Image (cartoon, rainbow, N blue to C red):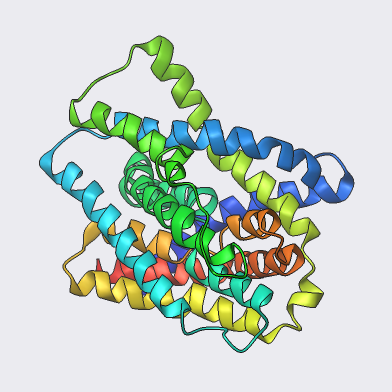
Length: 319
């Protein structure tokens, strides 16, 4: 009974997000807010709004040894999650052609931590504790770990046929996720409060994250070729791994390692997120199959409406 109650709690939050996704989907279909317009908003979300969410979360959580320890524990969980996913990917999809193999491997390792993870973590924590910021705070650590792996292993994986990476090490630091953590962490550790003329605009911009990310995501789904996705066996394998096997295994591992409470719940959110939008972005950058990348992301995103509530509810049950 408790599990079903947890499923309902999380599913309600997912449905709220899904309604906003539907607005974007319909907006694209009727030409009011198209995928092209959404892509023009992508830089605003990526470089401005999401960093505001992360910095604002540091300002909104009171510094204690417990909260600081929780952040670093969340970062550690995210690092372990990505490292094990990378190791697993080495043994997957090696019998398909190189271009498709890279797409499937990338989609299996990297989840939509920023666009889906942050909003859902905030929504679930709001429902459970009445404080969405703790969800943003812990998930910010996962965003930092995501960027750490994405701009190293992710670039290596998706780059040239010789298998040699040509990534720029400066991108490990000079990216929105890492920079916002670098800015927010001292503010949190030193309990610095910004003056209203700075903190209030920061809050207003941060509040745009969930609706804008979900509406934009809806426009992307509007263009996804689901009929083609249903014919790809490896997309089903990717979805099974990304949305069920890996999330449940990682949540269980975290619990065995002593992770409990709100941290375990938030961790279950970022490990169960569908394949990252970066799958499409990196496919385009490195001349991979963008159509396949879109199909994988679209398919896993739709299925995640069912799987994420179940995974998070299971974490709530054992937290």
